[in-house]
Length: 320
Image (tube, rainbow, N blue to C red; front, side, top):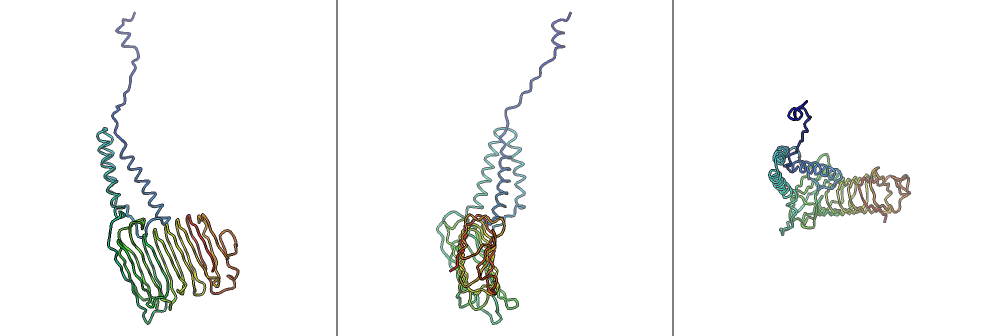
């Protein structure tokens, strides 16, 4: 017969596991997840052209943040005290990053500077080629200049880099606004006025971020036009062209108003994947879902080939 002591020794014992309720906040994981989301949204906005021109962050230079995340993970995994410390440091990092990237957008009273633009025509100039790169600015481009290129930049926060050179009779002019970027003009002044000479044919390239554009090309002998812009409102009024002239417009979320003379035969090619919210092509005959032509296009030698590669856009094309 078993004694009570023997019975208690041989009886299976229940073992209970208790978890330590003192767990830290998963702060590092939260901030690491937010960093991945921010990285994804950055490249999405960059590909869609929503960011100002010239904004290009080199994320390889941010590798020390991996060490910061590792330190936050060690702190937050120990106790609630470590979690709170990690949270404070994490918020401090976010505040510093926000100041670096958005601090320049704070409205302040600044002096408006006028930066003149003037490029003379040389005796060897047979054609012009202008490239304009702007950030959050108002761009006004037209013809009629007595010089090859003239104009001015009115701004309270940007600078203007300009360069010109002549190669084989083509006068190349580069204009680029630089300085602290902003996603809005509501708190700043930035207006670029450019006039082109009317005596030579022109290749015109415009790259813009969050910009408003008004291109009056009626007094510009156009050879080629290329526009790449982000979130913008743009009006382009065409005039005389040289032979079969190609114009390409790539844009993100925007509103486009294109005016083509009735005397100029034209064709519109809408790239696949363009997300047009609405479109009006007055005076054009539909060939298929992506091609539109004026009745006199095929038989003409002087004509406009217009390619539209657009995001979420409202497009109006009229002939007058």
